[in-house]
Amino acid sequence: MTVPPGDATGLIRGRLRSWVATAPGERIALVMIVRDEASNLERCLASAVPWVDEMVVVDTGSADATVEIAESFGARVGHFAWCDNFAGARNAALGLATADWVLQLDGDEVLEAETASALRQVVHEYAAHGGATCFALPVRSYWPAREGSDIADAPTVHRGSRLFRRLPGVCWVGDVHETVMTDGSWTGPDMEYIDADAPLIDHFGYAVDRETLQRKSARNQSLLEHAYQRTRAGGYYAFKLGQHAITDGHPVDALRWLRLSVAEALAEPRPARFVTSSVEHLARLLMEFDASPSSLAETLPDHPASSGAHPLVDEAVGAIRRVLGIYGQATSVWQRLAEASIRLGDRREALRAYRMVLDQAPDQADALLGYASALSDDTPAVMGILDRFLAVHGPRDAVCAWRGELQRSSGDIQQAYDFLYATLRDHPEFLQTRVTLASLLVDAGAANEALETLAPVVDVPTAPVMMFEVLARAFSSLGQVDAAVHARMLASARELEGGGSDDTLVPPPVVASQ
Image (cartoon, rainbow, N blue to C red; front, side):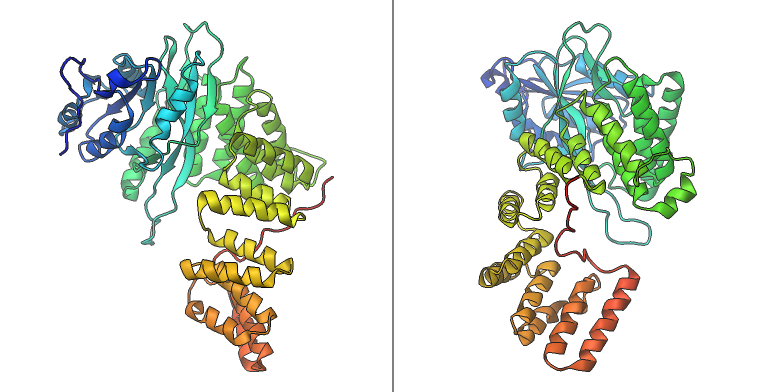
C-alpha cells in the first residue's frame, strides 16, 4: 500500500500537506461514513487524496480493517453507534471536519481520474461567493447482469448533492438516502443548488450479485417506508420511494410515489432542491406511459383527464413549469421540458428549452443531440452541432452515421464518403456508420463495394433492419433477384423480432412549430 502524506509534522490529524498550500476559503474535506469497507476503501481514498485537504472517516461498527486503512491515509477517524439513521451518522462526521467545503463519498465510490481535477476548479470559482452553496455532481452507477445474461446492464448517471460549503445550519437530512439541506437554525438566504458536470463519481455499490442488491434494496425500502410514516419531509421520502420503485421495476408504483413527491414538495413554502430530480423522473415516466397507450389503459385507468391528445405529457409539462418557476437553472428539468415539447409537437418551445440547457452546459450531450434534431430543417446548423458533439464527446456510431447522411443528402457525396470511410477505418465496430456508407455506395452505383462493406457484419445478431434493406438494394442493382428477395425476407423477419441495434440512421423529424 502506498501511504499518502496525510500526517505530516505540525498538522492536525486528518489534514493533509496540501492544507497549508491551499487558499483559505477553498480547502476541501472528504467526509465519509463507512462500515466493513476494507475491500473498497483504499481505492476510494486514493482517488480523492490528491484533490482534498482533509479526510474525515467515521466508522459505524466495522469488523474488518476499515479503520486501519483510513488511519493509514492520515484520516481523522471517529466512531458512531449505528441507529438506522444515515443523516445522523453523516452529521457526526461533519462535526469532525474543519475545512471550508465538504465532499461526500461512500466507500464503494471513487472520483473519476479524468475529471477529478474539476473539484478544485468548482470550489475556486465559487469560493468568493459566500452563502450556503451545494453542488449536484454526476454519479455513475454500475450494475450487475440481469438474470440469465452474462452482460452487465449499462451504467446509469444521476446527480447527487455531494459538494457543499461547510456552514452552521447546513447538514444532512433523512434517515436513508439523505440529502444536504439547511436546518431550522439557518437564518441566511436559501441554499443555492448548482449542477456541476464534473467531477464525476463512479459508484460500484450496485455492481454486486442480485441477491446482495435485493437485500440492500429491501433494507432501504423498509427504512424509507418507516420514515415516510413519521414525516412527509416535504416530499423527500416519497421521491426516494419512487426511485426505489423504478430500480425494482415497478413503474406504476413509481409514478404514484413521484406524483406524491412533487405535490408534497410544491406545497412547501420553499421546496427543497430534490424536487428537480423528482419532477425529472416523473416527467420521464409520464412520457413513457403516454407512448404506450395499451399499458396505460391497463395500469392507469384513472389517469388525469385532459382535452389534449397527450394527457400525461400535458401533466408532465405542467409540473415541470411549476418547478422551473422555482429552480430556473435546473438543466435536467429544462431537458425534460424540451423532450415533452417535442412529443406535443411544439418545436419552438423545445428549441427554447434546449437553448436554456446549452446556455448553462454548452457541451451537454443529450441537449446537443436534441437541439440538432429539433433544428433538422437547418442542415448547416445541425452539422455544426454534430461537429461540436464529436469534438467534445468523441466518435459515436449514431452521430457519425447522422453526420454522414446529412452530407450525402445535401449533395456532398465525396465529403460524406471520406468522412464515413475514415470513421469506419478507425471504428470498424460502428454498425450504423457502416450501413450508411454502404447505402451511399449503392446510390453511387458501387454495389459490389457496398456488399464488401457489409460483409463483415452480416451475421452480427444486433445488425439493424436497415442493413438488410441496403443489402437488398445492392443485390437488386446487380441483378441478383433471389439474393435481393432473401435479404428483404431477413429484413421483415428482423423487424418482427424487434429489430437489431438502433435502426434509425438519423433522428426522426420534428413536426412544425405551433
